[in-house]
Image (cartoon, rainbow, N blue to C red; front, side, top):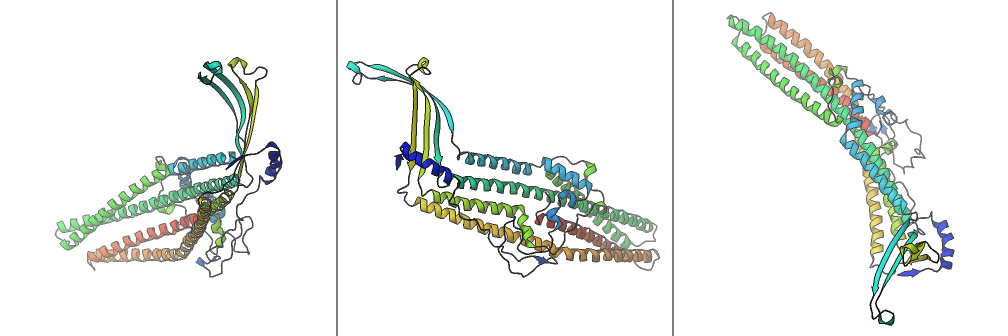
Length: 485
């Protein structure tokens, strides 16, 4: 239903509009209680009862263990290898996925400015020329005539007085969407930094495995050549020769496999960086790669609230909460103003002369009377959207907690595995040397040397894998805690 308001009624409404302009029907926002335990103890989640999490500005409810360095440090401080730092810098400048995330922020900001602009009046200029013919039956003295009307107006185009906060609720929802997009970009940056670090470490590990395979191939080839020479002289055993040959071929397979792995890692690194990688930025030996800084255990789970994906989920929850305010306001009347002031005349030359001024003032109120239940359904949809956003927010916290918990749990076991593997490599190296000495002395067959050498090579590969897993675990923990930007 449309009703025109008289100027006295409008004059009475304008002060109320100024007073109510900042009001909305958005429900009071309450951050959902944390669905995970309160903290971790030595990398294992404790069984403490979770309490409602306070807003970030208020800080944790109780005093807890200081936050992890990963939350506080920038990635430049966490990753200490200079080549890796250079590669991360290049990726942040060139990576296409991160560029898309940044453009999405600009897009969301533009949408927010559009929505925000609806709170303010739109003033424009309109120039109209209208020429029409009046037929004989309607004209004076039964004569047809032509009428020309030209006008230029400066006007206010249907400015809605936001009495019940509908526009402000929509603006608040748009703002939260923009902030969620910003957190998504920050999450994409953390993921990119972690991916570059992980690929760099994998390339260094595969390069080390290739070096070990090449050293093993050279040793196997040297032994084969020696045994072949003795066999050709009629001294060596043909069985020893065939065993040595089989080891040479097996070593060649390993060299080819790790050569391919290095090439694939290098291609993956170039895709992440977004440009060709200079050879001087590639890792050297795996032992020269600097370990990322460690992360302290005994963390409060409140640090998860700083993760970009959780912050983004909360912004979406706040946006869904704001949409409820807009749905509530839709039940109440909308009041809008349209006004113009200008000049009008029968000829273009008369527009700005005397006696041509014109103005119009059209206040309007639109009040819903019957909408077939659509307003109630729309309000229900907005409330269900909020419940969905709550579930998504809680799931984001649970996933983050599990990621950090797994990383902290694996950390101590990986250190123990790596130390045991290093001791195993030392023992197998001594075993291989003893078997080789016994073979050279003619005490044992060459089979003992082959078995010991294969066991040593496998143990060395295992040591490289565990060192890579240990470093990758720190990178994963760094990412899981949401630090580093």
